Length: 390
Image 1 (cartoon, rainbow, N blue to C red):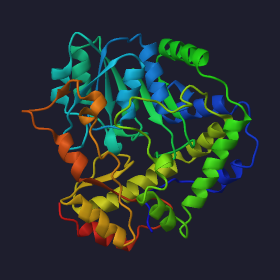
Image 2 (image 1 turned 90 degrees about the vertical axis):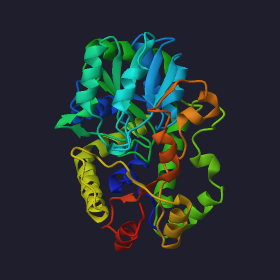
Image 3 (image 1 turned 60 degrees about the vertical axis):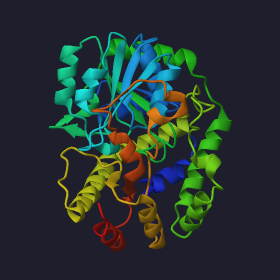
Image 4 (image 1 turned 135 degrees about the vertical axis):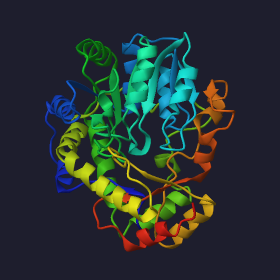
């Protein structure tokens, strides 16, 4: 079974499971991450969504509208809501799945406090268009959501520096990982100090039990992704036996993980340090594999894309998923919902062109081709994607 993704883990991360973590690991990870993302400051959090929530608060936003894509991970509007602000949803472009920039301007009102610009699937946002928005509305903060786009570039410029701050998720499915965790980067000393003060006053220190749980989780990941075991894991997942472990939201609730106000553990920071050192290798491999897929599908490669996922629009998605599974290939449906349709967000504003939603089409027709970096590209995968009707 070829999994839809596989974390780029090696022997060093495995050995770290059984090695005491240094007390200085978190600070070292933050410094290394900031340097790798080419920004002055970085602050760690237990989850990216915790960081986003506290970032909005550190910016002084309360009871403000925060614009974000409707086609995004649900944790984004959850974080906005937990920060005591109001999400406003914008439809996406068919060109790159990112927010429609024309609609962003329509969505801005006197109540707008920030725009969360997501480079989804690693497709870099258009910094030229965002700069135009910023010039027209200088009071509106632009935040870069880089959960899918570590190091993505627009015309040679890192998208993470195209705003007041950038947000990253570091769970096991991300481009690089610290097992769980998140990070905020910024070049603003004032924002860094405000956010650090808020974080340090509200996040709780964790004990040995949390570290053991994180170590056990990473060990389970190594076991689960073993080629001889993964088919069985996939069977359990498809039949609902792993639902409590893999389902990260309930469409009827706005919530956060139970430990969203815990500090990152030193163990997670140690894993993050190892992964940061491998960052360049990870990005290179993703771009090489993504461009191979581009050639087989006959599409133009997007400059600066980091290929966190490889999305393809298909007809009859259920049939495609089943056919792939029959050939030993697991395809992903990473975002098979749209936030504005969820019961808890139906009353929020949603901006489209002519009342036609691209997001509705995406959530029913997008698949994600496996991004597995450890092995050579499987000929069966290439043959399969070449046969897709789009």
